[in-house]
Image: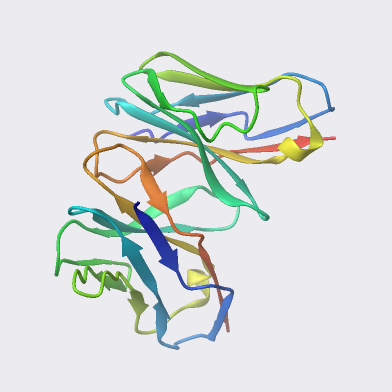
Amino acid sequence: GNSVTQMEGPVTLSEEAFLTINCTYTATGYPSLFWYVQYPGEGLQLLLKATKADDKGSNKGFEATYRKETTSFHLEKGSVQVSDSAVYFCALGYSSASKIIFGSGTRLSIRP
Amino acid sequence: DAGVIQSPRHEVTEMGQEVTLRCKPISGHNSLFWYRQTMMRGLELLIYFNNNVPIDDSGMPEDRFSAKMPNASFSTLKIQPSEPRDSAVYFCASTEQRNQPQHFGDGTRLSIL
């Protein structure tokens, strides 16, 4: 069946460090892929998305490329800020159903 | 544009009481989802609706939980009777079509004493 596996947390980095959060998926057909972010006390917000192979989603300095050959959608940012501290969820959507499959979430903490 | 609106934002009640959580999806969205989030179990899908019809309620933990969507602009999640282990943050989300992102409300933080 369809599933999403993402990097275990928590991840702690210093400000201005390079960030990678790994995400791999298993799916039939051609799913859409998403990264969501959840700040403390808030709901999940869409961070970026990609709808087909080799698409790159980007937003707020974050990027992720839909890699069909490696079934991956890793989240990257070149220089993190304290304000990026949050929980990040990788997710998969597919055309045969409305629901989205979420990964378990990765908690990111950035030290000043 | 108004986002997904949930009420109340916080609810504290005693074990055994009935709890009703409310959600107003984004206008024009035809799918609505109820999630529960806890530290132990993470984010769990409880139930979702397409065009006001329940499609998958396999995530509803027990018969104490029920959800309704009487029209396209309103849904409720009810717990009766409530138990301390129901304490969690409950999120509602909506989407306009398949394979599209879901939009989440700010959640209801529920504490059962």
